[in-house]
Amino acid sequence: MRYIRNFIWIIILEIFISSCGRNETHAAIVDTVLVKSSVMHKDIKNVVIYPDTNKTRHYPVLYLLHGYGGNYAVWLKRVPFLKTLAENNQMIIVCPDGAFSSWYVDSPVDSTMQYETYISKELTDYIDQHYPTIADGNKGRAITGYSMGGFGAMFLALRHPDIYGACGSMSGALNLTYIKQEYDLHKRLGDTLKNAGYYNDWSIVSLLDKNPAIKMPMIMDCGTEDFIYGMSKQAHEKMAELKIPHDYIERPGKHDWKYWSNAVQYEALFFRNFFEKK
Image (cartoon, rainbow, N blue to C red; front, side, top):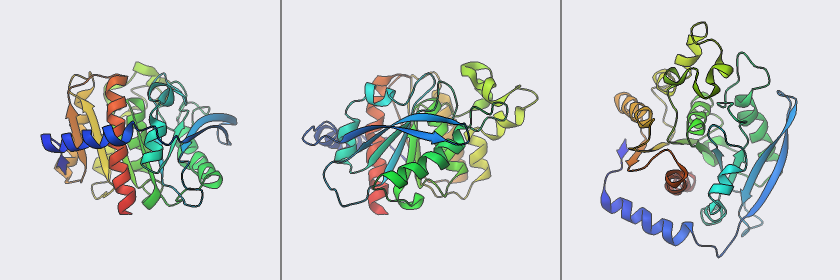
């Protein structure tokens, strides 16, 4: 476990970000692609950002999930320098559409909301077939996101460690037992009493308890003024208890784009280091 508090390390990261993350010398290419979901019987839009420097190499892929109320385009709209992050970190960034409030699960009560299968099977297959990826989850695929997407990223990675080699969360809504009927969660998981098992078993702390031997590189990032800060803190403490290696960052910040546009730069560096080691 590495709990980043060291001021010098933060300064080093800031220097890296300022020199790399905002440099527009090279601009990545941006595609909007329609991917057929057989399980949901519809086409789904996704943004794909990929480097434009080397036409012969294969790239690792970072899947970047949006939060409640967002869509496939919100990351690039709010954080346009994702193009530079993709170019300078030499990775493909994929921003899927997770619907307004899918929670990235295969809903047990709504057959039109099967986003666990879509993202971890249908979309990853499509990206590997149509882009020059390193099509090996243990070496070339990671996933993160903010809020609902932070939950989705850790949920999908912990349930599919063969698909993702690393994962992260920014301000993640990680404990479903606290959310219940808010943010359409009950529409995805059903009655909070009858289906209480889903709310408990699919929360990140429960998934960690079931996977104490997991060695997947993980990073969590949350602002101390965030109204769901306690969920990241709880997951961090559970990882510490289980001795699960991870990076945990907390710093002043709220549940907003000012925080996430900063956090994604730290996480991009984290995943770049993971990809380079592999």
